[in-house]
Image (cartoon, rainbow, N blue to C red; front, side, top):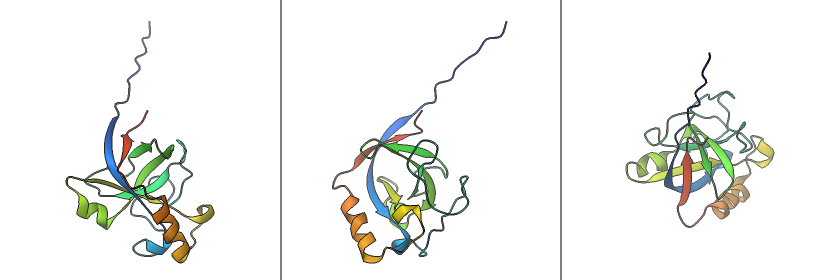
Length: 133
């Protein structure tokens, strides 16, 4: 007799500052990212469970390739890059910097893109589900 056990994946929530970045303000400029989590070293994603958006943070906050869910955006994100401001904010303050790019292409949208990133940034910290089911 075979017995099947289902293990519930544990998830938790944190409150995090949310910002946005893209090709024009990536360091160095471009679409390269720090970690290969299955799509090479290029930022991207559509925010679905199967294709999370790239996010940057401190590797001391989130494990490289770790997935989170941001309820206010209704998007899944994967930690694939580092963020200097996020590293400076840690310990003590969660900070997620989410990749943006026109049509998911590596395009330098210049000032218009940076203004869009600023407009997308919420004024208050947001709840983030870590390791969503």
